[in-house]
Image (tube, rainbow, N blue to C red; front, side, top):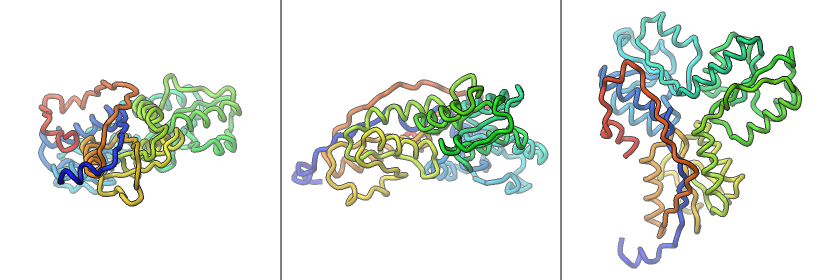
Length: 336
């Protein structure tokens, strides 16, 4: 690019949120697949998308991972190869099925999702009917509901649902939530339930995970005054879609979700002076960098960090994988 073109680029401030991108649970899940491939060789089967991000899935496929929706898709000759359960968690029926099929499985369920499973089971063990606040059809919701006997859990999605819900025993209820919900929206649902059912028991600790909360708080901090807010993430990623909504509510004029820089519509973006940028918990940093570079080719861009907190959580991989060395090169396809 010649100097005349460089000098004519409009100025742009990019407010880059921190934390953004991979959380400890997503990082661990991807590491589990990478280590399984290193330790056991290809193919390694993965039930459902390991995390909701096509870039990550395709990167793992290139290394030898094979993604299936159900265990019966694994051919008989590969039953000694590992099968990994996704970070979202699975119903109890899935590991039971794996054991019946004599499959070697590695559970990559995020420890914070597993915590919600235990909270729900504790409510049920204490004789409470469980209310799960979450999105119907999301793998995490399917997994959490699948920890409990049929008929012992009810799904509530909205404040309106909370207003209509009629339990058999209104004095014996406990709630948990999906880990990736909007903090503010969920507070409204819980408040409505508590208003109607004063005896409703909360979980011992907040079900919405720290990473979801931190990313939303960073967006709230960065969004006011932004001409455009870009969240990097997949359209089936709950936590990424929540960031788009949070940015709009916090004051961004426009808020969009993109998976790659190639999806940016430069005509629609037009003349902007301040850009907010974050990434959902399953979006890799290499794509964030790709988005930044795309804006830098069209704008004279300055980056400002909008840092809410620093995350240093680290979740251990499965015991079977801990002796296998994981290098920076192994994870370069997502971390750069």
